[in-house]
Image 1 (tube, rainbow, N blue to C red):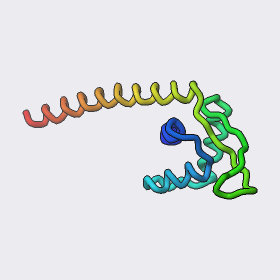
Image 2: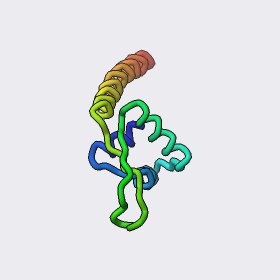
Image 3: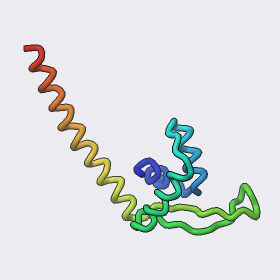
Length: 102
């Protein structure tokens, strides 16, 4: 979810474009995983979507996803949580590692 939100933070995208991006970053998610996740994210107000004409494929409308303010807040919250836990884990690891030397 965080990767989808971060991607949408930089540019609106359609579902297949998000799947393709994830695959390019060695995260092989299937459409059957991503689309339900996008639907849940929209239900929770993290993203919105509109049906728009695909400029690369005329006649092929696509659902374009956009991050909301709530989605932006979720990213910040997740990043803050990561750094908090990272510091705790690093401290815990250092403590265990130094006790093994003694």
